Image (cartoon, rainbow, N blue to C red; front, top):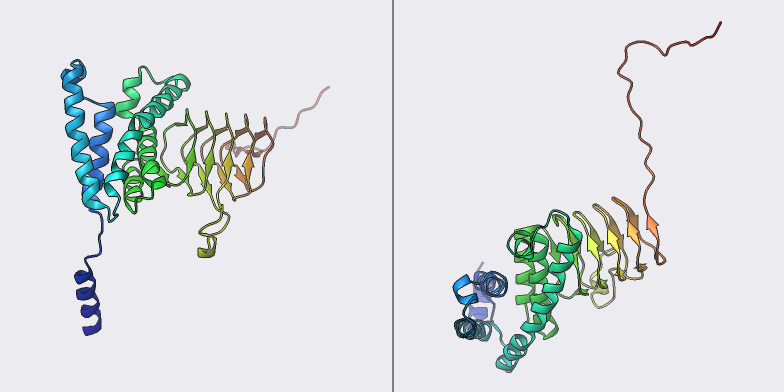
Length: 273
């Protein structure tokens, strides 16, 4: 017990930096709100909106500066906010892809405000930008917050193209080395994962590649770093795929459905006279 307490005291003396989880969540919530649900009075006044955005931007910069133990943290923060307009443009493309494909969607604002798949995608894209800049821990905190709110688990290091659409969303898992092309749509319960887990494989591609214009229906599982789902393919519900699929494929499992006969009488005997 004494050794344990000594270790804690030594670590405290070192002042090992560790980002605050709640602040990380508040940061990404406020950024999402700024981009997609601004106050109408601010939205209608361009000058006021710019001033408000600059205030929020400065707040976010202070947040990042206080939570990154890097000598070039100020530069990292500036790079991130220079990329925010590009992230926003990509997310507008994502939202329009959902609006175009989902008959239940009426207007794009509905997607901004109420679609969990879009919320998870937005937080992934924010986290991914921080990840590729080498920002520690915060990207994972952001994607785990999205996971807790939506049931969608997208690793910040995954690579996802434009016009990405998640329908319903609950139970989706997208692994760290997954590559997804443009105009891909996936449904609830889809797993893009590894065939097996081993710490030695940390720096290898363990997760599949999904090419452009692929649709993956509910409950499908695609595993393996060498597995490629060719463009314009459709994976049906509950399929299990561990080998590559050529372009324009339709993959489904054939189920045999048997109906129980509730009649207490034996099968009739039909005869002709």
